[in-house]
Image (tube, rainbow, N blue to C red; front, side):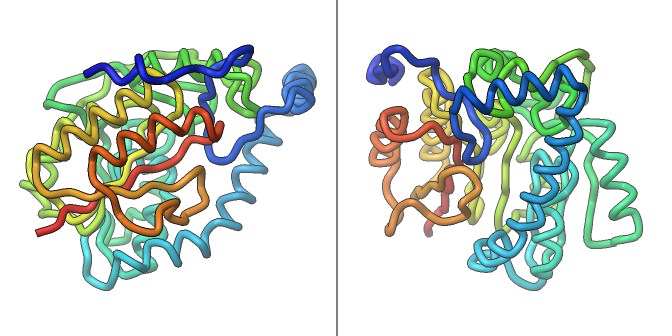
Length: 287
């Protein structure tokens, strides 16, 4: 069933396509354009992102300590420069960090080349092994293998995610492996975090067996919500699974109890009426 038909887009506004907690204020968009004209945007953006990562570290530790402990195995899919990897390591886990971007992998190698608890995989993930097209942005946080997701970002009126903020200037061919292949080689993870800028459904299709917990990002636009629902449906075919979610980078579950796939469907379909934030869906398999 196509859930897009059930979603009514707000009148007189663009579909939201945001990263963590960004507020659609026209004045801020003007400010972004001014920064770009003055060639100061990237400096300001990187500074804000760095400060945000530092401030969020404590809540990341608190959140993931519910699930991750000494000796556990974690998958960091879309590791970027290793913010989640760092948290998993502090909690005592071994981390399989998967990242296709050359610039990010260089930083990861510099950080973790002497750490035997980190295994770096310089690949993308997808539904099957092979090769794929990675579209590189001038900001490593929004490079993507989903042209659809990028178009959503370009059409967004959100601060830090509009066309005035980011550019996609290069296509590179990258090798692709799957979650199943990673599990075959390294074992089943305690948690698998997926943040791949709109390519989550393709990554999840590469999983055919239950794992303890998986998280993946969702974006509240009609088409991308539909892909999130397809991800939920796929996970439901693998085993008995329950769901929760969080907004932006709050690292707080929005629901007081875990819900079924059908209940999560309904919640996702209501989100465009309630918020402009992206978020993360959490799935836990129960025996």
